[in-house]
Amino acid sequence: MNKLPKAPLKEVVFDILWEMKQAEGGFPYDPGFEFAQGIFAQKIKHFLPVRKRTVPENAPFTVYPQVIHQFWQDELTWPLVQYGPGILTVNEVEGSYDWKHYGQLIDSALIMLDDSYEQSLSLTQMQLRYVDAVELTKEQFQALDRFVAENLRINITNGFDLPGVLTSLQVQQGFRLDDGTLLNLSINDGRNTITQQLAVIWTTTVVKRGRFSLQEAKDWKNVAHQQASDIFRKMMSPSFYQTFL
Image 1 (tube, rainbow, N blue to C red):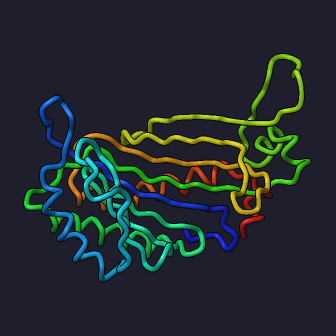
Image 2: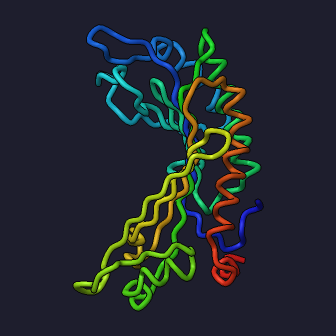
């Protein structure tokens, strides 16, 4: 699906986790990270030249998957790639999002990651997450359940007299798809962090767990994108979808 002209997208995140070794005491660690991080930084700087470290140099960080390095296109300018022991994420936001370019960046990051390790990585999880949101008027927010029912086509029904006006909402649904992928859908109330405008936020997460190669992750991301796009279209009422065109 091509990007909608007025898409409600706020952020999209692709991430992978890979198999780690067990240290004494049972803590996981990434034995190849110490050597690979320098190689990866050298490779990715041609795409994302601004590098930031998220934890101090002397902090213990090899005991669990944790982002250590961030690579930006410019100072706090997306896209963003984050990397650490056992984890890689590729982040993008609405203003610069385009699936073709974003997908190419994912593929490039995965190739650079693979080239940075002496041994091939065995992935244990791959995930694609879309965060969408629309701002609401005060009147719409006070009838949030009706707004969700009419526009996102999910009915929230209480079988008892309400004690007051609805002021918050959280809906969680999870689905197992035919290929073993999990699709999780959450709907929450919130606010625009800049304008403080009331909003409804829905997050679509497609995730698969098992044992995968980096090539399988490259192929799967396209499947996951299609699955997320399909549920987006199915959720929207025709009139609500039209507001994004």
